[in-house]
Image 1 (cartoon, rainbow, N blue to C red):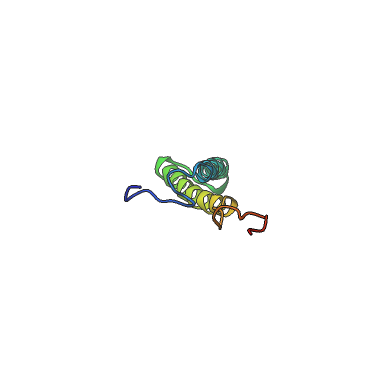
Image 2: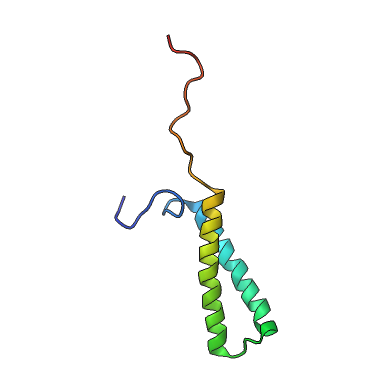
Amino acid sequence: MGSRERSGPGGRDDWRVRITTGVGVAACMAGAMMLGPVVGINGFWPGMLAIAVAIVLGVVLGRLVGGLLFRPSSGGPPEDKKGTS
């Protein structure tokens, strides 16, 4: 594993957390686009700022929810239920 790769939630191979993060970003983007005109965000730069905030918020919320929903298993391999003799 390289120095930038992490195991566990949010790691490079954790596709479920990545999908949850993408869904969070999409939801926040949709909310920003729908609520922008309602709250009075007009113009190019305020709109870009609102989109940047929505992306950051979506990434944070998506990783948080993905990490909570898809926790790694806490143990090793399952133990044998039969008694050893």
